[in-house]
Length: 194
Image (cartoon, rainbow, N blue to C red; front, side, top):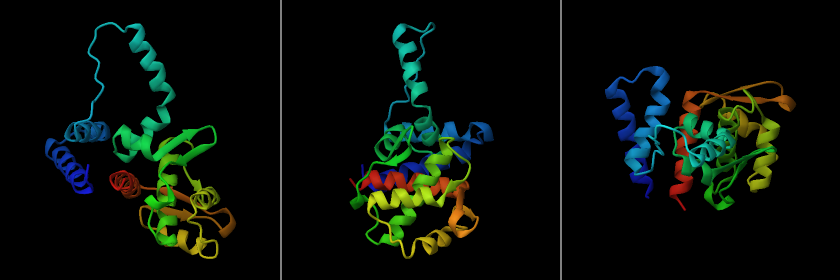
């Protein structure tokens, strides 16, 4: 799938959502289902009257994947994109794409990492505010950390999809709706570039 076709599908799903006047509490699910449909992905609907052993087993598996499902819903991206960009375990959220998938410039790549990690951790319910120290660890693991400029790179993000608070050593980020949307688009771009 090309980035253009993914972008077109996102725009079409957004337009359909606006035209249909979906109630606010159903918008995230409706958008996800519309996007899945436009991308030709299965919605995994099961219309059987009584649960079978296999559907009960799937329910257990689904419960184990609750953080990933929450990320998919909040970032408004298909499950397969989430599973190709994020991994969630007891140690937190990990980014799967290689360093080469991120921007070439360290500043931009570090900000991409910050956006994805904060969005995923908060969407998964790990925390309401993400410590900048956590983002620094991930940026270092990904090979995008410019330690001399890291603090200013985080400051530059303030007001661009997230809020920043705290003193230099204890700074934290909080996503807003625009930030979640940007993180979802970025995650989809990372996959389309493969």
